[in-house]
Length: 358
Image (cartoon, rainbow, N blue to C red; front, side, top):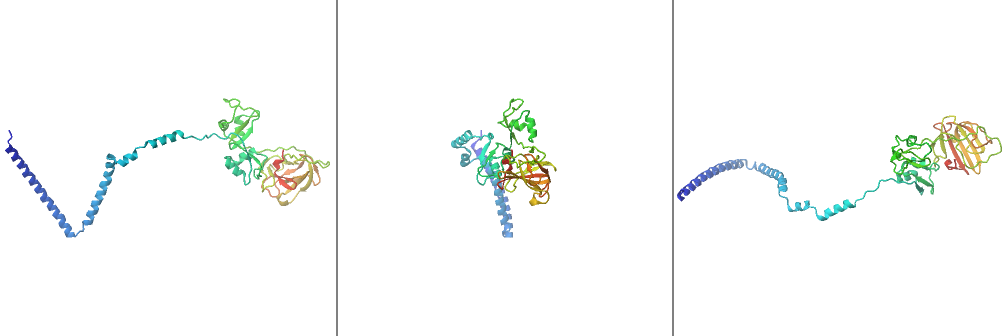
């Protein structure tokens, strides 16, 4: 049995041991401190600033390392509140999702008839309706889209491309090739195109078909020729003009260009657009840029001009019938290549030939 006296002796022994250790540690600590102090005193504060800097840097580094750990493990009340979504915000988000609508991307179906206003140009109209200029020109062949007049009605297609009437024998593949498409897929994809057979995509003659991205092929004009001019009495014109030459339309009537240009190979025949009398036949010279050219008076204030000819077959005073041969296409005068410049004058003022051509 352990006696109380033994416990007391044991406690005294521990006290003596700890006291000795503490004294030894204190002695060593005081010795080290004295050494440091002696050095500082000797250097008169030379180490003071480095010690302060080192101490501050140590505190900053320790703070940066420990701060994320402390925040993650012991979040503040403010951060906890900010991470918690309020019922109202959740409700608003849900409402926004359920009430959001998507606008339809389905294109316009019908052709729009637009009445020209002051300041309108074909480029502005095309931009406003999201189509290209060529598509508007293709849908308005008899309208001078380069010189619009207030009140003119311009047809606007629903998409850039061509709108045609299907003829017997037409197929989606043949039409795609004709109007410059690599495949017939755009015709099938257009949502408003209908087919006689939805599986084979057969077409019905007479139906209207939209060809998105299509381009009008070169316009071929084929007049009717009467190979000899009439020498009979003056033939008054009908007022409805026929095409004076075959070829490709390269430039249309506008405010800066008083006629239509029809390009074709050198020597292509030129015919009178209507019955009338030759009032001018220039066989040589520059002639204001027209080169060799002919004018025909059709009566009722209507006169036609045929310019840049290579040969002239008629003389002043000759009566010509509709389709009568006047000469051949050339490149005389101010010209960059073989073509016919065709101008129509109504009471002395140049007008758009397409408005009278049939």
